[in-house]
Image (cartoon, rainbow, N blue to C red):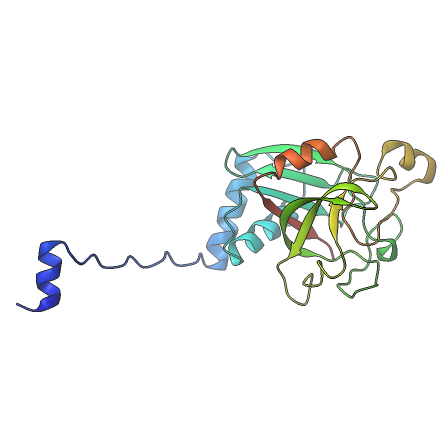
Length: 209
């Protein structure tokens, strides 16, 4: 009897279980569409924006169940930030989010990861630790996961913070939200809730053309 067979019979050797294979793109897309339906997001947000966010999460093998999608294909006058709990299959928050100063006026028409561009960068971010920004106060670090797309996020000091130019009053006066230096800025009144939602980490996907 071989040594390996003997170890198997005595229970001293347990073969390592192979990791589950990654879902092929088509299967992941089917899964994304199923989750979209389970979360009752039809008519609330764009299915393509959610699908791209969900597929990006799969590609990066991310396990965080709090997923935010900033749909920058919508005008800034719309509430285009959606925070979803994938585990409980529910939308937690829908609110406004600003794009970068040099990305466009009412619409985000261009993106860049170049330092100093003052533009929004698309792609998937890991929402990191809570910080206190000297300029913006309480905020969340963002770590770009897509090299060449948003990989300079930390160097550019791209964070999730609040701003008074992200509000109904600003829209009423200017016909659009104010614009950031590239950060996804949110309304001041929503930040405390957002900080609680991401206390255990999470993901942000910026959907842009």
